[in-house]
Image 1: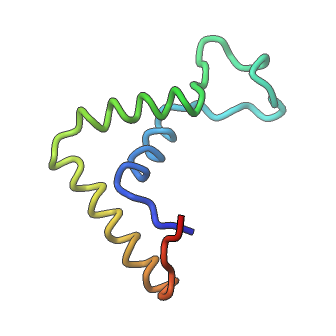
Image 2: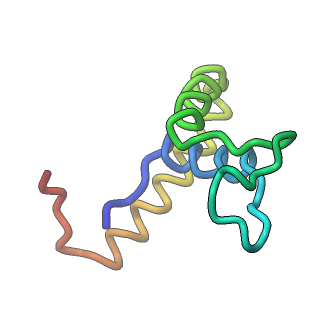
Length: 85
């Protein structure tokens, strides 16, 4: 697995904060509460990108530090890992 970058960490956090947990037993969108709709992954990504652009450099630094920490941990766990697209 590839380590996450600063934006991906931000997007994961953003997604958790902007989605409502589904009630047990609801498998499709027809049962979703109309007052609290869950946005699609595509919509969430667009909103996260806009929110990321609005962050100050100091706010982005927090996510960059988390990404650096994750990258270091990944390097220890997978010392011979090389990204090969």
